[in-house]
Length: 232
Image 1 (cartoon, one colour):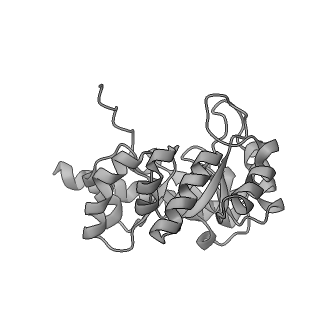
Image 2: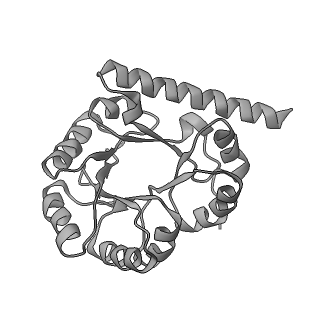
Image 3: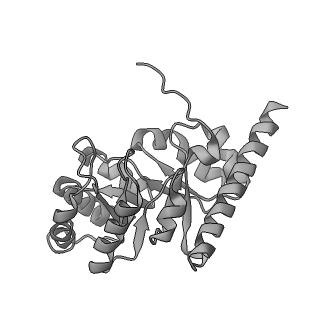
């Protein structure tokens, strides 16, 4: 039966990724409990996501507020203790929905976002964990604060906007070795007293763990190839 094949496939892939996370932790003397696996479910339908939930996964990552709104309220009614992370870019006009929906936001990267989040956190009395995104490769097409501006931005988050920042996030350039980018992000976090590091994806999470990642974002290694987005 194809449905149960799909469920078994996701469960087996999830178990394999968890095993790799544990192996990577042991290899550098870390407790596997210090690393949170975020299953990146963006573009996948709720029935595929349910295979992972049934297999024991509780922490998920989405890229878009709109897509998340269409999937997660129903899943949360059906299953307990789900945790949802926004790992894609956030627009200021979506801050209200993002604060209501997500338990963590990994893409704080400009003053307008800080202002919108600060307002909604006070209004809703709900404070998601916040990560500042660092553009370690200074890539013009990517979101994120430049490394040399990170300290000042983090200070502004706290002093000008009253935000509690819990950690940093980075996405290294696709064509470069990830290790120096993870090392740089960890260094910025350490000197700013931040404990959480959202680093590493399907292809490089073991290296990220070596450099102190507390959250790894893994999608295709769990769910398989992403469905192609529908053309407009």
